Image (cartoon, rainbow, N blue to C red; front, side, top):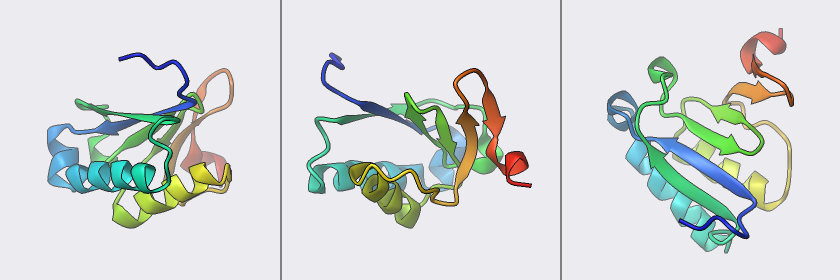
Length: 112
């Protein structure tokens, strides 16, 4: 896969637990919203195997921003793509980890 021209990469967990919890609907929603928003040439998606966050699944990871989204569903997936289209950095209420340029930080503990 040639990623030339893409600005973002969404990794969507398709491990056993995430799939059981709705990862296929998340994948279909994200890919459908990207197509509807004409962003499929800017944001590449990849279904992955387990990302090691099963208790928080389905998981989606946005790069290069390094944001891990937990408990994704159809509504959160639609909101994520809407915000990416608008270049809006608001939170969708599903962030698990965020990268600060050096390391990952647990988003939940940084809100307290």
